[in-house]
Image 1 (tube, chains in turn brown, blue):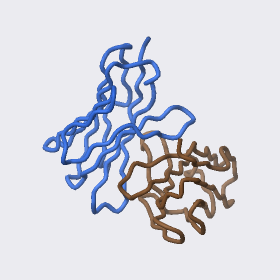
Image 2 (cartoon, rainbow over the protein chains, first blue to last red; image 1 turned 180 degrees about the vertical axis):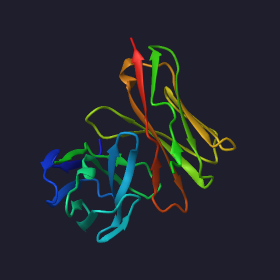
Image 3 (tube, chains in turn brown, green; image 1 turned 45 degrees about the vertical axis):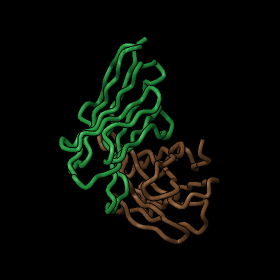
Image 4 (cartoon, rainbow over the protein chains, first blue to last red; image 1 turned 120 degrees about the vertical axis):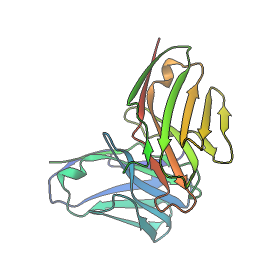
Length: 112
Length: 113
C-alpha cells in the first residue's frame, strides 16, 4: 500500500471558520492531488501539485487554497467553510501526471 | 457537462458469473483510461488501465475493453466474487488535458453469494 495519510479523518466545523486538511506521503511522488467526493458527482479535482511550491487549480477550486512546502506534505485550506463544502475529501499521489494515482483514506468534513 | 459517464448507478450479479461495468465518454481527446475500486470508508484503489492504442487489457480476473469509435469502455470481472462488491469508478485523461483525470460518478457492484 502506498504510504499516504490524511488528517484529520473526521471533522465537524461551523460555517465561516477556516479549516485545513493535511495529506502526508512517504513515497516521494512528485504529483499530489486533492479531490472531493459527493453523491452523483464522483470524484472531482480541487487542486493539484506537480512539485514543491508548484500548484494549479482543478475543476472545483473556488473557496479552496493549497500549499506544498515539502515534497511529502500537501495542505488543503477552506478559507471560510460553507455548507456546500460538506464532503469527503481524498488526497492522491502519483509518480507522473498520467500515471495511476494512489489515494489516501479520506477525510469526512461536515460544515454546520 | 459530464465528460465521463457511468449510467448504471448499481449492478447486482451472482457469485461466479461475469460482471460488466460500463463507462462512456464524450471527449475524443481522451487517450488513457483507468478503473478504480472503492470500498466504504476507504480511498479508491487502482485496478487496471488501458491506453487508446489498445482495445483490450487483461489482469487476472479483470479485463478492460475500449471501443474508441463508440467512446465506450467496459470492465469485465470473471468470475465475480463477493469481495468484488464495491463502487467502481472509471477515469479518463487527455495528453493535453488541464485537469489530469476526469472521473465518472461510479457504479455500485453487489456480488450475491
